[in-house]
Amino acid sequence: MNILRPLSKEELNNFFSEYSLKVIQYFMNTSLFAQPEVHKDKESLPIQIPKEHLEQWFVQALQVEAVGAGSYPIDILKENEWGADVKMLSCKVDKNDNLTNGDSGETSLAQKFKGTGVSLDDMFKQEQYQEIIEGWTSIWKDKLVNVKIDKNIDNIYFFFFLRGSKRESYICAFEVDVDNINSQNITQRDKSSEIKQSVFLNGVIDAKYGNSKIYKAKKRLELRLRPKSLLEDGFLITIPTETPYKEDIYELVQDKEKFDAFIKTKLQKFLSYTAL
Image (cartoon, rainbow, N blue to C red; front, side, top):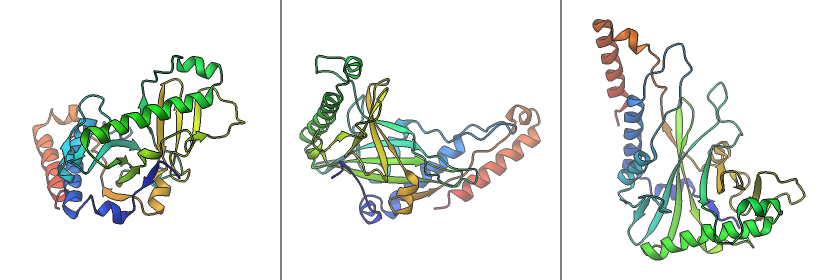
């Protein structure tokens, strides 16, 4: 049994109504409009969305409360029902903008390793991998159990915005089985392999949909997803997107007529694209 279970589209529909997705699309479009134009001789840059902004996307879309101040384990709360951590990960795409089989970027599930009386570096040096796993699972479970008690909620989720290709991005969610976070369910993967920087884990997520590891250098428990598999198995909601403009703005501002024409074209495209 894996700790993270992906929500089906039917389950996602319980959270994301038609209007919720329109809210997400609205914020996506306004973020794209506000991205800086890339110089026409340079490669396009991926869209950048501050985490605080992304949290507000989900607050508005799901009509919930923001509780993500500082390092609190969740970002949003449905009072007396559920809480969720909101995360954004980047996807790997090929030259045709199709998802590849590669892992997404990483996100932290737990950090600030302490309380064992021995440093993480020393435990790696002494090859105390089981003790490392026990320490991290305890940290992860304790912080989520405390949230459930503190906020009087039964369920905790991860909501992911997956930054995809120039054509589309995605939303998915995972339910967290907090009660079963322990070293009996989360175990070391590939015990026979040489370990230098990371202990890879079984039991956090189905290997088809992602992987988890304890990363020595960053001193945290990390998660990566496999977006292509999630898409093929129907766990992703697609959000249409576009590529930010390529222009030499310095050149444009020297010619008012050209600059005005550019702004009008960009605005007309934005107004057309945001028709919900």
